[in-house]
Image (cartoon, rainbow, N blue to C red):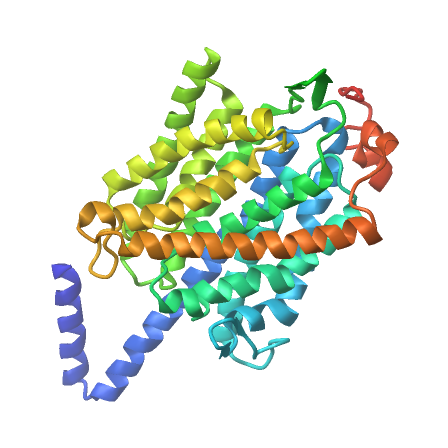
Amino acid sequence: MKSRIVVMILILLACTLSGIGADEISSAITLHQDSFDMIWLLVAGSLVFFMQAGFAMVEIGLTRAKNAGNIIMKNLMDFCAGSLMFWMFGWALMYGESVNGLFGFSQFFIGGNDMVLFRNWMFQVVFAATAATIVSGAMAERTKFSAYLIYSIFISALIYPISGHWIWGGGWLSRIGFFDFAGSTVVHSVGGWASLVGTMALGPRIGKYVSQGSVVTSKPILGHNLPLACLGVFILWFGWYGFNPGSTLSGTDPTMALVATTTTLSASAGAIGAMIVSWIKFKNPDVSMSLNGALAGLVGITASTAVVSPLSAIIIGLISGFIVVFSIEFIDKILHIDDPVGAISVHGICGVWGTLAVGLFGNTTHIKGLFFGGGFKQLGIQFLGVVTVGVWVMATTGILFAIIKKSHGLRVSKHEELAGLDLAEHSTESYSGFQIFTNM
């Protein structure tokens, strides 16, 4: 800090001696900061865009080989279709001029020569894509590709932007003090709630649950490539350094260092927490649970990453790792909801936990959590936000999936599911020449 002050003094002195006025100095400093912001947000947005590859690799690795090409197409097209919808409608509803704090209504079909607007759109469209693609994993291996495209259009154009406006667009939740720094609720819980509704509307994969009288047994359907899933997790973790530090929205904000640190610590603690629980519960350190633990830690810290200490980040991540194991088991074996990759637990449940953690561990001038003398006020506001966004997403996606199911069809036929969606939906094979899967 001292060195920066000295440099600034020297610059000002040099400018004074050379006859440059105060206005010129101010303009130069502003231009310098604007340039850093432009570069930072475009680089950070590119990192978040690369997370699409991470989601695809995780989903492919944790499911069967006969559906790999279909998963690639879903992760490609939910971004492509979603980005067009977000350009036409989503940005306007999320960041346009607010209508009573409920939704925006300006800047449809953005254009012109405002480079800052284009920069901001580019950074935000990749967040919209993340919310959309979360659902792909939960509904994997039995969803019609065309039905998934319809869903992608509506979540990017309408569902995500409106709840996003409430929090990030100056809407009613932000006005009462709800805080979500980088999207535990805005992005991840939205994807998680949509995943829950989608999987319930879709039903389980063939052979997943076996009934014997009144007893229902969950049958494991193992993924075909754990190394690929691991690669996906590392790609997602890498992309999260655009997701969280990028949300400082400024290339000259030193808070990005704290954000990167808390992000790293929470993810690490989440993986360790999930490993410990799985080791105790299953007698072995489970690979897929540990991978999901890292993602759970990342989701869990996303809301509070800029307002908590490194120690608090470790605690948040550790609890996220514990939560994700028990949540995956509960959803699968008690509720009998078939989520092949654990998306509901990682993004939905841990998104809720991460949002509430702001009200517990927040410790800044403006955000004080329960554990740091802030009482229950912030926690109550965070809880209200969690509930209202959850109700909004579940209601709208419930209507959407019901309409798709009734009019177009949501699920492929039994024959198509058994053959695999690569052949049934795309007339191709992801591993041509290798017979490495069964029909179950």
